[in-house]
Image 1 (cartoon, rainbow, N blue to C red):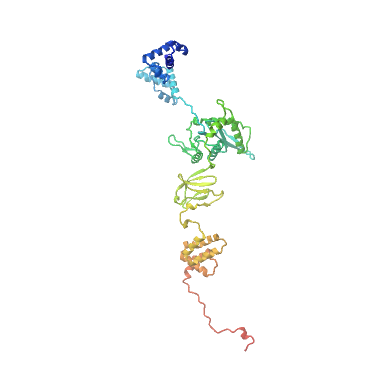
Image 2: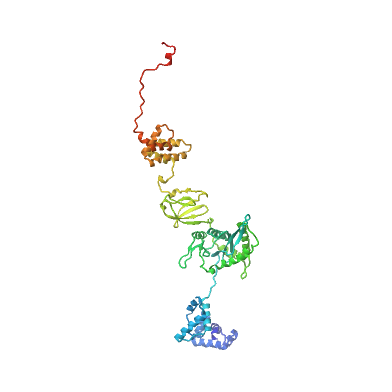
Length: 520
């Protein structure tokens, strides 16, 4: 056909001085085709200089405009609509062709047969459904997932069998793989697996591509932003990475790890099927050895192995690991701050800045610390109380409001309170502190005396202290003052007249010397 004539090549050889016969002989063309190119070029005035920068198809179109373009005489259906209908349940090409015949008959248009209808639809599907190969770049992403097949641990004492889940990570460029065992698939195991994976790689990558599991993705709406788990997002941020989950029911979005999971079943699970493991570290060591052998296995379709490609091309491009090791954390949401400015966790209490009393806060708990957040703002941080502690408080001085009222009690503050009541109370307080070997031991007894002023009045406490001092009690305490106040002795002490000793009447008494041998 004339369409296959390489018109640009013919014009180039003609410009170099070759004749039509020589061009046909050297390029295995017919002289008729070469002559057709010469005639078309002479008729349009086109030379080699005019088409030197054009593509072959453009040169052919300029020499033979409209040639080879065919338009079907049959009515063409809406092939996009046909393709959408084929996705519906029970719809076949035979059914759609029948509907097409009815439509063309009603419009009076020529209709194509069933065979041509099927071939044309197949051509449409091939063109519109063309797929492109996605090329992965080195050090850009890692795909992660849990393996479907599991392994087992046997308790050496009881013989109980425990299920072991396998975490699998794969770098798509080099196909370098990592496998890590866990006793469960909870969030803490999911995060620890990522930390172990990045440590094994010696660096991190900008993208983490997981599945839409609940330990990583809270919500994946059909439209809108993906809602990630806070702990997972925080871990990814620590390693300078972003979490980009694959689409729901689209395993091709992480095809590398899906393929690696199948390989792990052969290299790890089947390879270790004859061995029994009683501890998780022993199993992890055996899995690591099997994965080293798997990564060192030569490729079938390209030179090298996973390890060689990873070491040569991908490892230098990884993001350096953070200086401080990431701590696994969990989040507790919706905790209310009590009126005393503390929030409860594990039957203990931790302080929050007093301005947030009554607010709802979130807790981030690591192995050693507890952090309190209000939205994205961190309010306070505490060391966790020892395990087994109950009803104990952790209070930061910065969380308390200003003023002595909210500060811890000490001897100076106790004496200042006593001075506001009266001098007798000051003496009682001083004697309490003098009666104990350590000053802090006198805080509770002194405060017990002073707090009587809340139940009674300051004047009555002062009167009771004065009354107790007249009783020559060396160190009056709550046990001495409370009965005085309860019975009202402090009130009647002022009304009672002073006691007067009766005057002695009579003469003098002679001594023994007077009667001993004296005058009668």
